[in-house]
Amino acid sequence: MLAKQKAKRILVIDVDVHQGNGTAEIFKDNKSVYTFSMHGEHNYPLFKEKSDLDIGLADGTSDKDYLYLLEKNLDQILPEFNPDFLFFQSGVDVLATDKLGRLALSREGCKMRDKIILKLAKSAHIPIVASMGGGYSTNFLDIIEAHANTYRLAQEIFF
Ligand SMILES: [Zn+2]
Image 1: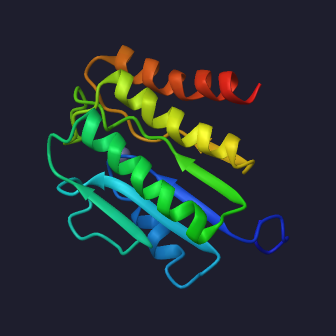
Image 2: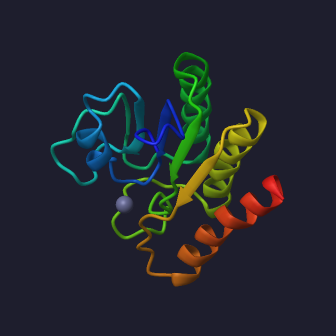
């Protein structure tokens, strides 16, 4: 997209419970891509890469604190970086029921997370691509519902 000049400033919002270490490493010297990762500080990877902004959360972080930090940081990044394209890594391994994730979001909290991000894109008129990420709950319904919520919300907000 950058090479074809379809976008000039891309913001990657990675809210999978695992740090967005791949994108952080790939784009570390690229000022056209801002990497924002909100993840479990004690989740894999043990040695984190450096994103443009990393918010490493304590074990057991739940809806209220999580959503507060997400909104607060997005409210700062958007006017500062002024992206014209968004990539949204919408992993649902932030759920309290997740086997690997160390955070404690409810399904409703996870849905609110997605709503905040999608509404922001809509209101700022920034195109967004959402890609699914992890989900390792023993209860498959939790994973399926949480992933489906992302796309239900997208439909609701954009169409
Ligand atoms: Zn993950």
